[in-house]
Image (tube, rainbow, N blue to C red):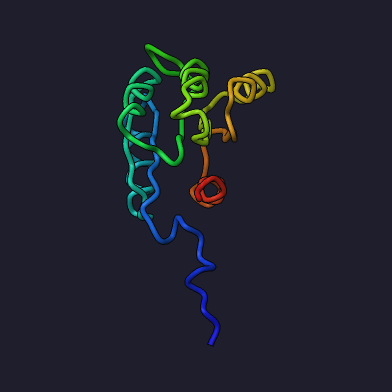
Amino acid sequence: MIETAGLRPAWEDKMSKILIVEDDPDSREILGERLRAYGFDVEEAVNGWEAVEKLKKYKADLIIMDIMMPKLDGYTACKIIRDDSKTAKVPIIFLTAKELIGEIEKAFVCGADDYVIKPVTWERLLPKIKKFLP
């Protein structure tokens, strides 16, 4: 018999923690429900400022963040997260309607690990999420 327990990705054995940063309540709710149904521990923030504050206590394994938000946009929040030694290595996926090349380039300059344009299907988003989990 072949032992396979050690071959499973870590995200299957523990509840990975994902911070959703999205100002649109419907988008935030739908994504949160989908991630929770899949077994992830989900925390939510309504803007970049709230995300930065929540990360002081919530140890996220991954951040899924919009760009266009009030108070603090995703670009600026990403820079702040990258400048903090406690959160600098947390992967960030931008999930946004911004699709111009300059906007995408700016996201990666700010420190994004991936960039997904809305609308997105679960079948397209889930592999990107799994890619960044331990």
